[in-house]
Image (cartoon, rainbow, N blue to C red; front, side, top):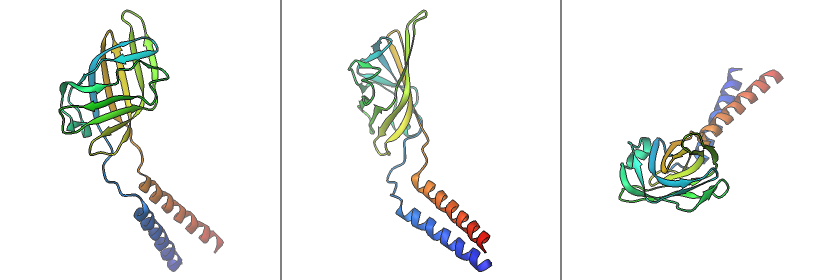
Length: 185
């Protein structure tokens, strides 16, 4: 019985090592942290048009700490972006005067318009963010505008690493096979 357990454990370890060796190497880390951008815009209930350039405000955190607060350094998409045309739009296309550059391309967008005292528009969803030296990463974003001032915030979305999931799956498969053999014996 000990011999069959050791054989099964060796099989699971071999599968795990093979899975780890076959996983593509990670050349760069995913983007983490938060970045705040502010500037000017015009908007309606179903569209927004940024004025370029915008500013990096506050103190960027995580990977974004490679960028420093600056005025008039962020190139924004100045097209009239509607609820449908915003998908796939590269909202941030460049950051000048920095050692690193970042871009953001919209994947999903939800528009929330309110017109109580002062009209406001909030757009939120996910986007693909790039930052030089890091792996492109899916991030959550929130764009809030009231009057003609817009604030923009990005934060990372945790995604599981494929190699870790494969290793976990192969371990569970090995344990299942071990249990099946025990029942058959």
